[in-house]
Image (cartoon, rainbow, N blue to C red; front, side, top):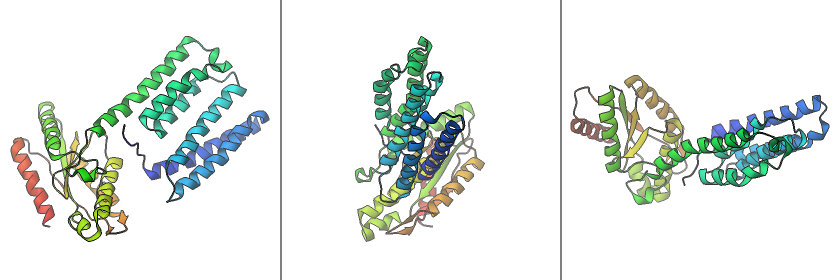
Length: 310
């Protein structure tokens, strides 16, 4: 439904931790004298090392190392159930969780549905009670709900320019509707609401000087950093060619300033081939307690214009 993005640094930590856990599991089996069970965890440890090296390679796709990690989890759990019938069926949740973390939503659901009945061919699972089946199905459905909701929200995202589809930002009209609903919600429930105005001064000249590819790279870098460092219910919208609004529900002024500093630091570390270090201007703009929504919109427009001419 949508592309499933995980920050590169987080995936590097996941590969490193999986290598440590797999090697530790192999050593534990060796210490327990379970030499027959050593083959699978030892082999998967080597596979995970190769997956980490492939992940660190800049020119390689991210799908192959993820598939290696996913298959390694399935192989180890399958081997544990096959060689040790006394293993608790609770470990069935490990490959289910791995599928939702590493694969797109549709692929994770399909694999869990297709491979689910195969687990009951193993003696350790076949001898379990009916509650094991109910638990497996419930876990599969519950883990699908957050990903489905996230995919549904991302499906609504539209850029102002159709050619800028890599930028996961709301269209200005949709953004104002979302902001209006959040504004009314904050007013009714007495909740805080904050908004960051972002301006990319390099975006105006990137396409003219370096072509559409440079412009797309700037948009992609901005949206990628915002998506990876903000919450799922934070809303990024594009109000003009180079100006964006980031709506932060349930966020105080101090929280908005922390988000601004975090984004400013992260975006300043992005270096692109054509334009060099990414430059971004960010200002926080909180609604006043007695301010009308129309007046707040005018103030946001003025703040964006001020950043553009700074």
